[in-house]
Image (cartoon, rainbow, N blue to C red; front, side, top):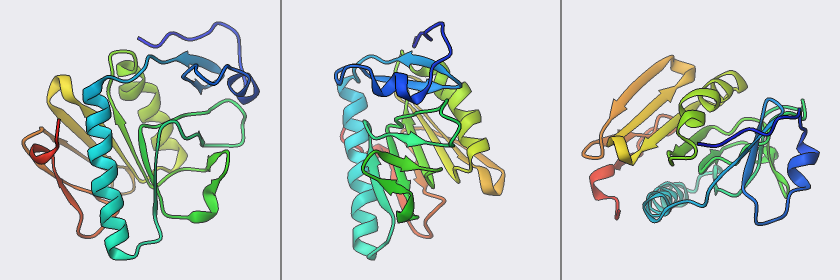
Length: 180
């Protein structure tokens, strides 16, 4: 489980960490993260390719980014996240240092060290920050939880299902076809 640091920290504290240290800042607390597993990376790679290829085939304006890539959800200096995968359709939010504002879609792939954060604090943060859609992909539970915040919808899927990407009209991802 990701453990918080005791003092109240800011983005400057996160940026001062050594480059090889993976961490996020949520409500002023630093949460250190372990390196992702092979299955985590396989899921991430496949989702990145499927979504990126879809956007490219449609000539879309949206951009796909994957961790480590910073998201600054607000200007309060207390939150710095690195979602596993995100889609940003407003190009003005993208900068060299990361995404400034809420991405349209965020996908978190659950790891043992991030489980509580993905299901709890991040779910709340993403919902309240204006993220349109949030997926929690949990291989160990054979589950994909999809939240479409704008529509107040929640759906639960398995790795045998095809999941519609809500921010696009015609993109579906068949999880049984992922190379994991």
